[in-house]
Amino acid sequence: MNEPLRIRDAVATDVAFLADCNAAMALETEHKELGRDVLERGIAAVFERPERGFYLVAERNGERLGCLLVTFEWSDWRNGNWWWLQSVYVVPPARRGGVFRALHDEVWRRLRLRPDAVGLRLYVERDNQRAQATYASLGMVETAYRLFEAVGRA
Image (cartoon, rainbow, N blue to C red):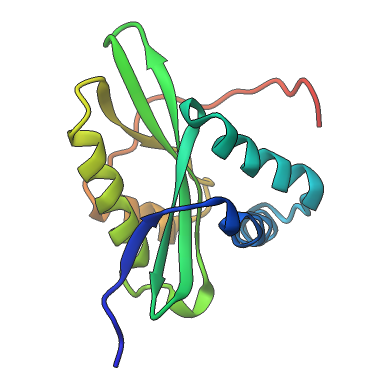
């Protein structure tokens, strides 16, 4: 029998799983191959400095099915932190099974407990209509902002 979905904080022993998810997501959505060493060091850096954010892992029957990263962005306009969802990934066999919803709901629950948290944001590929529909179904709305970047290093 299937146990209920469990959402938990990621721990250092999840680094390989988180790296697998990040690599798969980059390949799937942007057709980019990420360097494993840089990826694992980047993930470990979150555990080393919790002010950078936190990872959540979804699992059922001891099997990890998905994950996401929450990072923080200070807003002087609101005197609080925006929480950003990043590195969202659900393994293909578990998609459309409520895994992302459960991860999102846990983030939202935690956010609402923090007086310094002002809201939740994420960015999504323009062509990823399925993800956009999922985010909209959770009450998220498209903003008027466009994202620009200047890359200082690879």
